[in-house]
Amino acid sequence: MRQHKLALCKEHFLVWFTEQTQRFINKYHMFGYEDRILVAVSGGKDSLALWNVLHRLGYQTDGLYIGLGINQGTGYSAESLQFTEKYATKYNHKLIVVDVAEFAGATIPEAAALTLRGKGKPCSVCGLTKRYIMNMVAHQGDYNVLVTGHNLDDEVAVLFGNTLNWAVGYLARQGPVLEETAGGLARKAKPFCRFYERETAAYALLQGIDYIYEECPHATGAKSIYYKVQLNQLEADRPGTKLSFYLSFLRAKESGFFAHQNPAVQANLNRCQTCGQPTSAPEQCAFCRTWHRVRSRRAAAA
Ligand code: AMP
Ligand code: FES
Ligand code: ZN
Image (cartoon, rainbow, N blue to C red; front, side, top):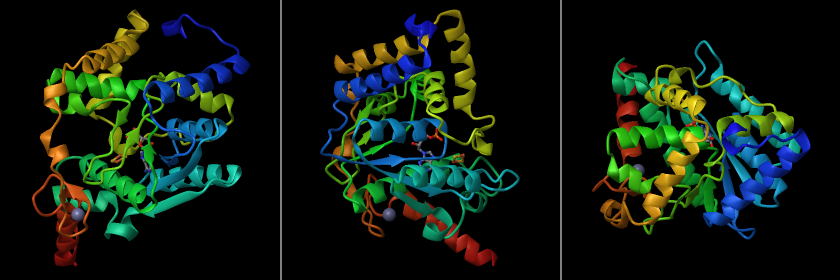
């Protein structure tokens, strides 16, 4: 690990990785042993590694898998569910599965085709739907915190994009923890936000975790992947660049750099008139508006 000027054997890497996770949980006050934790698992290396290490550290965790129905040509969703279910069965963990087509009436690619009419990628409706379902399950199941497997490479790509655009509202919200809001948005944490992707992959491999290697087929050409390529170049020339970019950002944030940017909408959330979930919109939340359009266009086309 050039970025840490550290080389470890299997045994010591696993100890180091586990201790570091605990250190990040403590440092950012993510959660404690009394908390019920909902782990969003996609079947990929990061989220399965996260579930594994949290369980080994003795935390109370259940998993949530969201079936997106992205199967054309690749069988991506079907395969990622298989990996997740196999993992949950092997370790005897509770896994909650929400299938978008059953829950909302169409798969993500169908919803994207109906709302975007062939223009654009399904990623925005997918992101919106995943966030909605994660929050809903966390709320319904009385979980204290929702955790995701975002790693340093993910976080730095987002940070880079937000910085290029000086998207101060998003910068103010980015960080290892997003506090619960009064309106009912669940508390969120990213215990792996300081691990390089290579480190989470190494952990998964060394722990013998089987995970899906493929990325979502719609990720090809995404801006975040382009940023990752550029950032990898910087990292190759100057090891540690990603980590120092992220940590300097967190320090700037802690010193109040973005304090006045905290979006006021967070404090004034309304209740969606259809589903009751918190929303910054005056009447219906973005999920209900989008999926209402999907279902009516689907009915009209039938
Ligand atoms: P991604 O946006 O695909 O990079 O995923 C980031 C994190 O979101 C993952 O590490 C998971 O914690 C969570 N996640 C992504 N896809 C799903 C899914 N289909 N079901 C549950 N959690 C997911
Ligand atoms: Fe959502 Fe790819 S479009 S994971
Ligand atoms: Zn709603």
